[in-house]
Image (tube, rainbow, N blue to C red):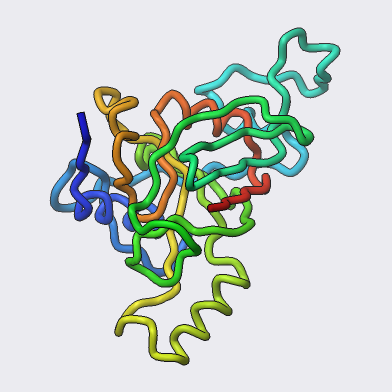
Length: 221
């Protein structure tokens, strides 16, 4: 079964909530037409605090002082997220070791870096987790696109007249869920996002729980 999510709804969903993190967004929540309901503010992490503490009360509290030796079976803290576009995989990495892997859906724009707004490409480059928005596609980890390299590339393309009129460099890229349990798994049968990386809802919950703001994100072809 191939799930084809309407691009208009995906676009509408993305920008209303991401107005919290970017100055100009155009979206509303997926599956709802008309005015978008208010969305919760992104959770801000306290420097030095465990990442999972930011998700309370949805996750159990973590002791103020905890080490792997003190917490039997504790999941290692994720230091990097690696996304391989050609393989459609997302790996969680803790201190250089892959500790969890997932299959993902991407944007249908194909290989290569994101060039400009609306090309539906998932970016290629090194970024950071820049925040999180609960309730947008279930849960949304903001990717710090565009980086300086992306901005330089866009400026050169625009200088050469290779950017469509009215297009900017783009914004609002994230790692997110689907927001609908019945689409778990099947949404990955096709690339449907506007350039984001999509997981099942339970998977984005795990990724968000284990990954702190500021963690590195490396996206490759």
